[in-house]
Image 1 (cartoon, rainbow, N blue to C red):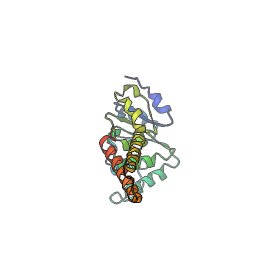
Image 2 (image 1 turned 180 degrees about the vertical axis):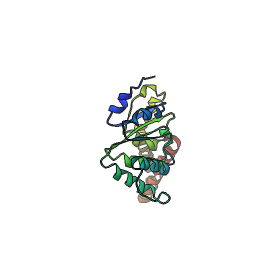
Image 3 (image 1 turned 90 degrees about the vertical axis):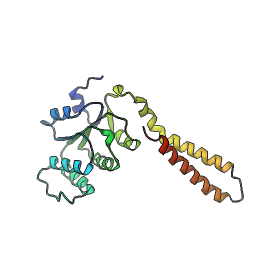
Image 4 (image 1 turned 60 degrees about the horizontal axis):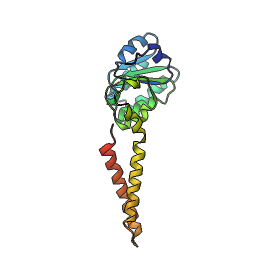
Length: 202
């Protein structure tokens, strides 16, 4: 298991992801010198965004019961326009679409950084966000090959779908080609979606 130096986390100017570690340990070292917040898991996202906002500015005035996720994202970014902030959380694999959307939006700010950890393989939909992280103990991850394969998964599925379309067209030579073209495209889409459902998760 790789020994991770504390300074290695602090000095990096990019998002950090760690396998099978509790980032709470790093939070307790960071909190006295850095503006940051920690939570054990990233959902439910609205509650987590409220926690972030309360940490960023405890005096911020807003309607806690009615403020939306979209409004929270914008208020947080406005508050962090001139201040650096580090968000730490475990269980990266629990990110859902709503949480991914929110955290990727915050990640657009140069003043926001993430330090996260995960224990299990996560969904393909989280991969674009994962690509913004530096995986600093990849050698400890028993499924490292998945990260090499996942990047080409969609491309392979698209190519297989295109091949199916061509085979369908070749077998459907007729004066009603336009109908068959539409049918072939629909057939290819079905193949693509089936491949995504059957094999699109790591």
